Amino acid sequence: MKRAFVVVLLVLVVAAPVSAASRVTVDRGVVQSISSTQIVLRGLDGKTLSFTIVPRTEVLLNGILSSVFAIQPGFSAAVTHTAAGRALAIRAFGKPRAVKQIDKGTIVSVSPTLIVLRQADGSKVSVSVGPQTSVILDDLPASLAELRPGYLAAVLHYGAQPAREVRALRR
Image (cartoon, rainbow, N blue to C red; front, side, top):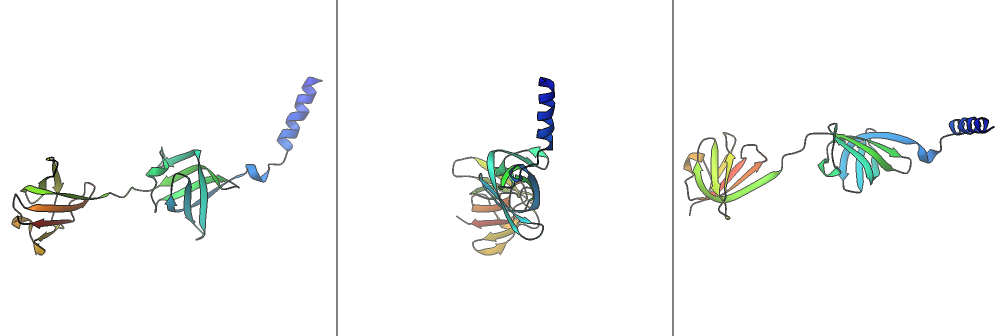
C-alpha cells in the first residue's frame, strides 16, 4: 500500500505542470552597467534588460568563476534568470580595459625606451616610452632627448602600455 502511494505521488509530481515562477530563461546582450545588485544589458533585439543580482548568483568571466566587480560595460553576457528577473547565473566575456594612470615625480633618467621618476614618497616608478609617446616640455612640443634628470614630470599611460604622454617642466 505504501509503495503504491509513493508511486502515485511521484507520478503526480512529475506530471504536474511547471509554474511560471520556476521557469528560467537565458537572455544575451552587451553589458550597459553593473553593480553589486543589478546588471543591465542591451539585448540582441536592442531592448534594455535589467536583472537583480542576488548573493547566490553565479558569476563566470571568460569561463572562470569571478565576481560582478570584474565585469565591465561593453562585455557580452548571458544571464540565466527567473521570470521575476532574479539572475541565477551570469556568463560574461570580454577583455578588461587597462586602467588609466598618471605617474608624477622628478625625472631620474630618460632613455629612448624608458623614463624613471622619483615620486613624492621617495619611491621610483619606471614607465616604458616609445615613438608614439607625445612629449610636452614647458607647454611646448618636445622630444624625449630634451628631457633631463631633475625636471618635474607627469606621465600618462594605461597599465603596462608605453606612455601616451609626458608633460615636463624645467625647475
